[in-house]
Structure formats: C-alpha cells, structure tokens
Image 1 (cartoon, rainbow, N blue to C red):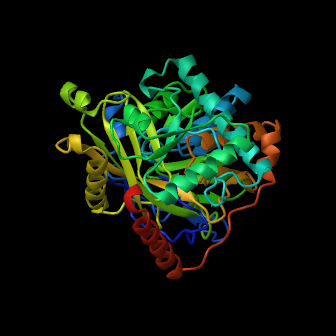
Image 2 (image 1 turned 90 degrees about the horizontal axis):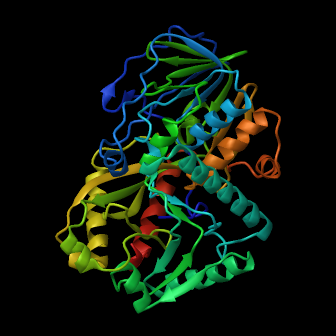
Image 3 (image 1 turned 30 degrees about the vertical axis):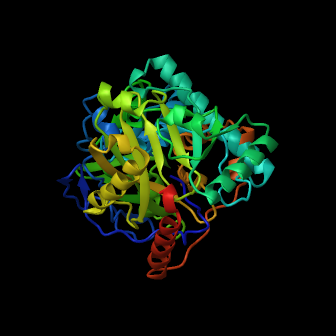
Length: 479
C-alpha cells in the first residue's frame, strides 16, 4: 500500500515515555549522563511493536545477539539495525577495516519495521503526487538509480552469503486496478515509465485471472524489475553475515544521548561513547531531537494466512508466486508467498510516538478479512495466522534526511515507504561519504530538499487522521 505524502499533514508528535522492548519493561535513569540542557536529549518513547509480525515468526529462528551490559566505546556507533543500519555498518567495516563499529538495535533484528513491510524491492520511481507517477524526469532518473543500487547490493549479499531464507525472486510487480480511477492511474504511469525507457506491460481481463487465480482485477501494469523477498528472513541473514569488526547489540534501547564533544549514549545499564554517531532509526529520529515537526510516523497493517493446502492451491489456480501493489494509494497490497500463503496489507494509522497502539491489529484484521474474501471467495475458509503493524517514516514533501545533522552526528532516515532499497543505498552512500568517497548519487542526496515542517498539535493529528480516513473511504473496491 502506498500513500500520498502531500495529502497528509505530515509531522511527528512528542513521545509518551514508556520504555518497553519485546513486551518487557526496561528501567532506566539519566543519572550517569551530564545534565547540561544544551547537549542532553532524553528519548521519551522507545520502540515497542506488536508481538505477531508474520514475516518474523515464519522466517528462520535465530539466537539474538546479547544486549550490552555496562559501558562500551567505538569510533563508529549506529542506532538501528534495519536495512539502513545494516548497510551503514557493513560499508563502514569495509571502508575502515581496522576500526570497531557498534550497531545497536532496540528490539531483535527482523522484529521491527524492516521485517514488517510487504517485501517489495522496487526499482522504478513511484511519485503518486505527479500525474504520470514520474514527475521531474531528472529526479525520477536519480531515484531509479538509488533504488537499483539498493537492489543490486541486496542481491549480491544474498548470493555471497547464501541467505536462502530471503527467498529473493526476480518476479517483477503488478500494479493492479479494479475501478475506473485506478485504471486511469495505470495508463498514466505506463506513459511515465515509457518516457523513462523502463520496460512495462499493461495486462487485462482473463490474462490476469491466469496469473492471480481471481477475476477481481480489471487491469494491471507489470514492471519486471522488482524483486520480492521475505523481509524478516533477509534482514536476519544480513545481520548474521556482518563483518567481524561490527559488534551488534540487540535488545539495547538507547534512552538518552549527550551531544557533547563526543556523543554519549545511555542504555539500561551503562553508556556507549562514540567518536561519530549515525542514526538509522527512521521514525525514531525525532525522539533524538531531529526533524521533530517533519517526520510523520505512520503505521500500515498486514495479515498473513496459514499455508494453503494442496486442494486450496488447486481451487485458487494462477501462478505460484506474485506481488500486487494497488493503483489507488489507499488500496490493498496482496502477495502469494514462497510458502503458499496470501498476504493482505492495507489500512493506516498515525502513531505520533512511533509505537504500536493496543487493539489496532484486531481492528484492521477485520478490514483485511473483507479485502481477502472479495478477492478470493474460493478461499473464504482460509484463516489468517498473523496480523501486525509496522511503521513508516513519511514526510509531507517526500524528502528524506541524509548527511550531517550536527558535529559528529549523521543520519540516513525518512525513506517514505521505500526503506528496503532506499535505506540500503543511502546507508551505503553515507558510509562512503564518511570515508571521503563521494558519488553522483551522494551529491544528489546532499542537494535534495529537506523535509518540510508541519503544523503543531493538535492540528497535526486531526489533519492526518482526517486525510487517512478520507483516502481509505475513497478507495472503494481497491481497498
């Protein structure tokens, strides 16, 4: 599922201040940090996701790295072990083989946002604010190159380290429509991709039924360059294949930072001192004092069925593996997975503190059920096994954050729903920038607009919720 950034009154609210990781309360204090208000930033909300992410529980089991107990220090410290943080750590280790690099993750790897998306590694630009979904051709081409760079890096790592649990396939993606307004979007996007010289194909009618096993969709735009993955399996494999000079601490939430001459990070039982600090924590960057009125923590929700039986697979028909994104930004993303499950992903909520909200998974599970049965009436008796939510860092002007934030502090965050490929690429480019290596894409990112500020509360939450409900109500059968 996608969403128009300009249609949202974007921003980030203040946190609520509960420290919990994986459902376990974490006690902490700020006593060991300086109390200089000019340099001390307290983290008021820590990552706390719902316990039922389907990709995490159906991917390979692994023993997480132990939390940090006591103090540590390193030339490089990275917060967030998702796609971006893993890419930064790996490339820093390559650029500085004699340096120790600390990578800190508040939860377990693969449990957070990076393991809660729909698993699309998309290459082509997808600017839903532009009539042809492309917009400025120069910006679109650079976006294409960034996405393709992220794809290439991930594909090479999967091959090099034999990350079979990623289940990476070069299957392309289908952007599918049911209603007339969605078909108009596909026709416009088809023209935009042709202007960029990107291969694509419009497919309609019974040909779609032969692919998906349902006659629900009327038209689809097929783009062959997209890869599909099991996202949690992929990030787990990336974490377990990090270079030896990377020290990964899991279940180690950072509760405060002293931005003095050297950043000093507080955690539950000690401190981490960094020569240079890199934020790769996306929706939680505002908790560290950066872009608090520009980054919009938005949650999307997915449900995953149990594996289909052989009889149910026969009833469904179609191809054994495919991925659909909706023509309407508020419609449903649907996938048939490597293990013959069906994923349905739709619905959104504005979670200002970046944390899951109690009761929301059950609420949206019912929405997913209706969407599923509309598409696959022959599978009406197939239950969902997992339902979960996951955060996106959105900005009103679709801009990301890349580069230096203050002395010795850097970031690659706010990927606007493309954290798999864009996070991988920008994390790698940031690590190269810190090693004095500059690329054409580096200059593009450094010279791109910064995220726009948004209205203060309570107008922010009121406006965002209004636009979310309006969009979802207007999606019609696409939902």
